[in-house]
Image (cartoon, rainbow, N blue to C red; front, side, top):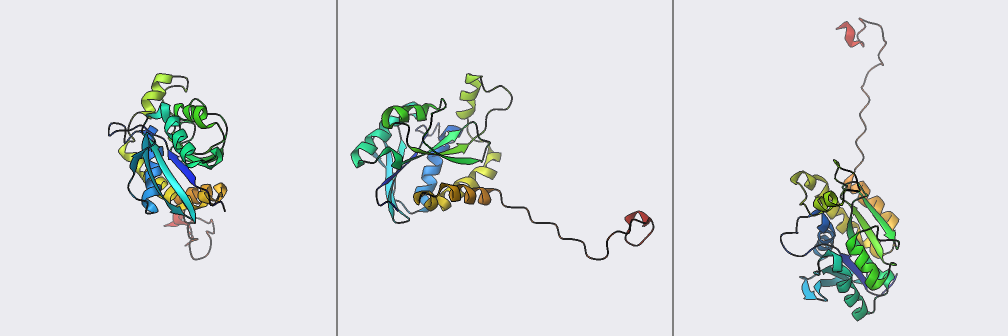
Length: 224
């Protein structure tokens, strides 16, 4: 296991007006991780807010850029350069329109798919960072090409009903985070999926003999 620092980044927009937005689910994940693993309070640095601690024997930095989403790369780049953290040791949590709400996927490198926060990261640290894509779903009543409708969707607060899946998702991310630290993204995804979608209990088989199928028999409700 690597002993170098892992820079964990949650993407979002600063300030109370944005705190509950779908676009801020990356901030929410970063905060849940820091809280669960006993990190200290966030402090202002690198045009963002940062805290640090140790998870699974590895030093961890957790950063929330305060530059607004479309300039996130400036904050991340400054922290990465200061601590000499290579791009592959940057792990970014961000919202993902193309995943259903409550779903999660891990990915190493790739394109930014039009996400302004990722676009900025590409410009400042390159495309090779690791991502955890947190599904918020697309707005359902218009097509994906309606840009204004999509912007309105991501900049709206989660509904109260969303807490039914959002809170368990954030809890599971924080709980299973050590698996990501160890580089086991597959196990992380599986454990989070199991925690957020537990298997339904099997129905017990009724006792007694099977239905004879003969109307009027004691086993056939049509005879009662």
